[in-house]
Image (tube, rainbow, N blue to C red; front, top):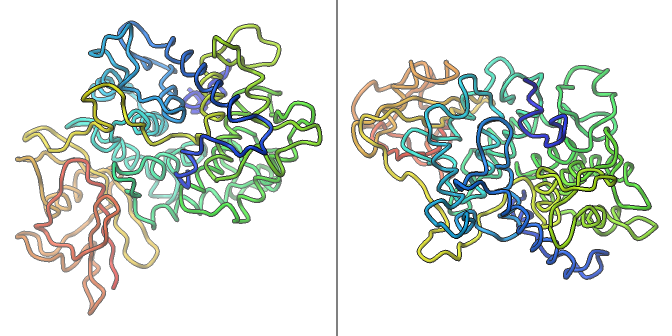
Length: 470
């Protein structure tokens, strides 16, 4: 099955800075007024709530409606507040977390985009992606698809969307405290690959273009251009960067003067417009002013709102459609609400419901996964998911590194650790020894790097980064 099916919500299964994800009110100069946007969000949320199944679910087997969580959060609605008939025991967040915790999820033959999609939506639903359950760590699941032979790619490089959504998920799904959980070295590696795949026209496509002059010269896709822009921005690339300005120019060139739609590869449609606007949102680029306000006074947001049925709230896919589409409604609402491809979960209104839910400790005897990067200080970053079976509620860095020598995916992340036992400082890793002020240091969940010791405590879901240097 094509990896396009994991993300693109069209009939053929085609379809920040994180602060931009929270951009929900556009300036008064924009052609769609704040009142129109508020109405669009209110009605759009009502429609997405109508898609909830009687058991409280949005997601199930195959392509389902789980992207609704990203749109609901962008529009200010917490997933835990979405219930079927007011039954709080079946709230959307609890049911989704239960699904992600199931041993058989997502399938017998999972691919990286399954985990990326889940991480983005779990985060928006208020589920810490690295701490879904004692046995489910979506960040580690994504790490397991790192390509040793082509560093910077996640999943087969031919399916370039897997790498773009790795950047979106790993950079966009921050810690509960709002910090970047992955090290900058990994973000830089992703950025390098995304840049290498930018087409000559300034956009991107779902397939790999790096090193292929024919593909680099091919016409880009509106949808993927929006996603790749967002991926760069959530990875720390500023909106003034040439890669972003070239993408912005590509989108401007596809703008339809009379409607504000983007002339996409498969024609004008809500999903393509939604992805493009979400890309602009994620980069802090206002989609209703400047280059995206046409001479006819139309913008991409105008087009999206014109695609919405009111008061029903659903969005149609094509301008000629007479009924709403679930996927178009998700993409349309998320974009109009100012969202990128995920959003910080809103504070719930349900009494006693926390903003976040997470597995905070290991369960002794239950196999778990941890995300690990090893940076040798010379530009070589190794990435892997490490399988551990803790004997208590916490474990140690020494135990994780020992496990990584034989139980890491992909293999080769850790080949040797010195000393091989005890709780003292790590003196050598993968044959590289401490030297003067250049020593092995460790960071968890984006914290400051400190001296790495075998006895360093590791908690459930910690994203571990080791780095050699001063």
